[in-house]
Every structure is written in C-alpha cells, then in structure tokens.
Image (cartoon, rainbow over all chains, first blue to last red; front, top):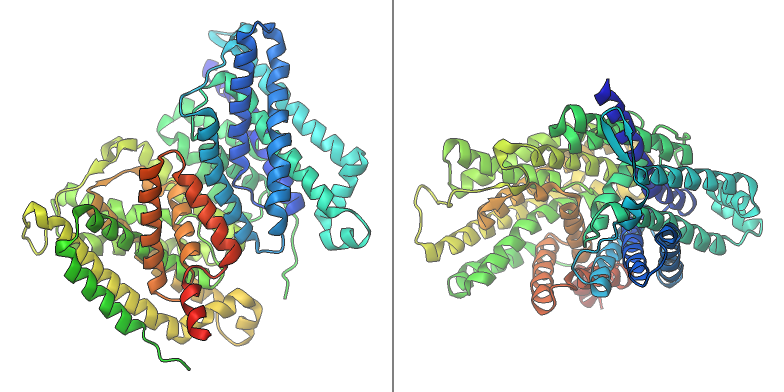
Length: 298
Length: 311
C-alpha cells in the first residue's frame, strides 16, 4: 500500500514535469505544424538562465522567497530574447518546406544551441538548491516529500489551465484556433498569421523554458540537459496526439505513472517502457489518443 | 541520355583506397573506415529518402548489427570480419523485415516518430541489461581475416580493405537496384502515392522492400563500425545517433550511390577538424553546415557535381 502511494505521488510529480516540458511542443505543432527538436534547447536555456540568475541574485543578498519569481523571470527573459530571433531570423523562411525538412532544420538549431549554451555558461555544472530546500518537506506514511514538488505540480496546472483559458476566451486564442483548423482560410479572412506564428513560437518556447527553470533547483544544470527532454516530450505528445492540449495532459499522466510504477516495481524496465507505450500507441492509433481523422489528399 | 559512369568511378575509388591505405597514417585509415561504415547506413537511408521517408530510428539497425557482431564474439569466440558483418546484416535485415510490416504503413512525420520510438526501446533495454555491460557496453575480440590475425600495424588496413570491398559491392548492388522498376518507383511514391496504386503497383510492398534493404545496410554498417572501433555501447541506438545519420543523408543528397560515402567522409572530417580546433563548438559547426545545405543545396552536396555536368 505504502509503495502504491509512493508510485502515485512520484507519478503525479513526474507527470507535472513532463506536462510543462511537452505542452509547448504540442502547441507549436498544432499551430505551425513544426515538430520542434529545438524545444529541448529552450528547456535547457530556461534551466541555465534560472540557475545562473537566481544563483547570482541570492549571492547578492536577495530574500530567498523571491527566488520563485526570479525563476519565472529568468525563463521569460531568455525566451523573449531568443525565441523571436529564431522565428523571425530563420524559421519564417522555412514554412513553405516539407514538415520533415523543418524538423531537420530545428535539429540543426538544436545542435547549434548545444554549443551556444556551452559558450555562454561554460561546461561546469550550476547549482541553485535554495528554492528546493527552503519550503521544508512533508511526510506521507514513512515517505518524505519536499514541498517544492507541489510548486512543480502547481506550475503544470497553471500552465495547462492558462493555455486552455487563453485558447477559449481571448481574441488571440480564438484566432489561433482558426489558424489550427485552416491556415490558408485564416489568412484569406485577414488574420495576421505571421504575427500569430511569432506569438505561438515564443509562447511555446516559454513553456519549455519555464519547465527548465523550475526543474533547475532539483538538479545540477549540466550541458546536454535538453537531449533527453526532447525524446520524452515527443513521447508525451505523440501518445496524446500531436497538437492536442488534453492529449498532452493525458500523455504526461500516462508516461508519468507508467514510469514511476516501473521505477518502483521493475527498475530494469524504467526507460524502455516509456518508448514501448509510445510505439504501442503509434501502432494502434498512429495519430495519438486524442486525434481527429484527416482526409487523405490526392 | 548521359552515359552512366558510376560503376567505373566505384572501381577507381576502391582501387585508390586499397592502394593508398598501406601508406596512409593510422588515424586517416580509421577515419575512412568509420566513414565507410556510416556511409553504408546512409546508403540505406538514401533509398528511403528517395521515396520521401525519413527514419529517425535507423540507429536501431546500426545497433542491432553491432550487437549481433559483438555477441557472436562474446558467445562463440567468432572474430572473422566477414562472418561478423554477415551476422550484423542478417540480424538487422530480419528485424527490419518484422518491423517493416508495421512501418510500411506509415508516412512523413509518423514514420519518423514510430521508428524513433522503436530504436529508443532497444536503447532502454540495452542500458539496463547488465549481462551486456549496461550503459558501458563491452569490447569486441580483435578481428581476424580467414582465421589469420595480421600483425598489429596491419589490422586497421585489413579492416579498411574489407570495408572498402563490402561497401563497393553494396554500392554497386544498390545502384543496380535503383534502376529496377521497384527502385524507380521511389520518386513516384514520394510525389503521389495514390497514383502509384492506380498504376497497379503497391506502395506498401515497395516501401517494405526498401525498408528491409535499408535495415540490412545499417546492420552491415553497425557490425563494421563495431569491428573498427572495437567497442560497442547502447549509445549506438540513441536518437542522436539516428540524427547523425539523417544529417549525413541530407548533407550528401540522394543523387548517386557514391554520395552517402562522400557525405560520411566529409562529416567525419568536419567532426574531427572542428573538434580538434575547438571542442566546445563542433556541434555548432555541424548544425550550421546542415542549415546551409538545406537552404542553398536542397539536393545535397552531390548536386554540386550534377549541376556542373548539366551546364
């Protein structure tokens, strides 16, 4: 029983992390039809920015409780600079190309980012553990969990609900839904699709950076951080259905629970079970669990 | 129509490699052999790319080939280069045949993602298999040829010569295959699959055949890489390895069977030189060259040759 509760809690925490990391990927795919390999780079950028900025401010005597806001601020700062640069500077010239070619372009960007990060922050690890330890921890049975994990879950809920609210209830959101359904018609109706692409890419990348920023206190921030995040978030969004918001949530919960269950009951299967689920979903529902049938074009 | 000089060019390249090999410094021999191994994998990817399919999981077969060769040495003390390569090719080919039933139904991004998932399953399995060295992998036996183990100075040349001969045969066979009706179907499948079926051809069957060929070539390349490097680990199945192969495929272009090997060699040179000059920016150099190629040479480096001929 104890172990079952542990599986459940670990699963929820891991799902929250996966959801934040993957939700931007699904948004960008939904609107722009780009499978963005560079998504993991924004995760890493967020983590690095958060670790270095928060660390520096704490060293200069910032009240530790402010660090939670600084984490968010660092993610925001780095994305607002980098994402528009990438979208306006490179990606917008590529939209006419094939989906697979754009995937390769983002792969090239990912390779470039890997080294840009090393050039800016060096190869030594960064630690910023204060926000993690600050809140103390709580006990469930014999198990101890830091309160910080609740912040991760909170961030996931706020990101998911916020994005959902934005799509359903704001003007930009409704325009985005129109673009998701049909880019050409939206353009013909006078929607400024280029502007929406810029907003989507920045916002989607911001979500990845937030994921990285709030993970930074729990890990040591080292080069190569984004590499695993990419495949994991691919797994999450593919299971749920590329471009689907509820799908990403479901995918995150499935992957999160499956992984924490295997970690506790069958540690040897930890890694491969995620990709097994991904392959099974693709095999039986190629477009993911939440997907709309698409007409075959002649 | 222009005369096809590919077979003659291949013979010349093979002769040049065999002649220069004994005098070349050891590191260039190593570089060349690895390029041939990767070129074999990319040759397979090229066949798939000609019908518009990008496999983001070709590392699966590369890794299967390498581990098949490694296991053969570990369990049965086999160290003959040809036997190991044959084992790698057959193991990967069989796996490709089985997975092909599933993957031949997939197109575009979903083909890539499913092949990625399958290769990551193998990675996840290998990382946790302690009997095979987990994430450290294990070393191979020193290679022999026809039961003879050559002097240390000649081992690398021997592997290079075998690699060159095998790559020569593979390139020649693929070159012929591309001219068969099944081979010529590839651009048609890329352009419009439904019309292909109206003509009475089965796109799924054609893709399945191509998929098995590509898998067998990747297994061959994996076994060759394993014997060259002398060490294998699960990283060979990781998605970044697949990414590297795709990278070379795009860099090389699909114009000719020589292109993959040329691409692999150029990739090896960029990697070595860039890593030598500045170890922290070599990925940046690779990424930028990929961007430049996609932007300015959408048909790969090989289009430089054909463009000159046309003018």
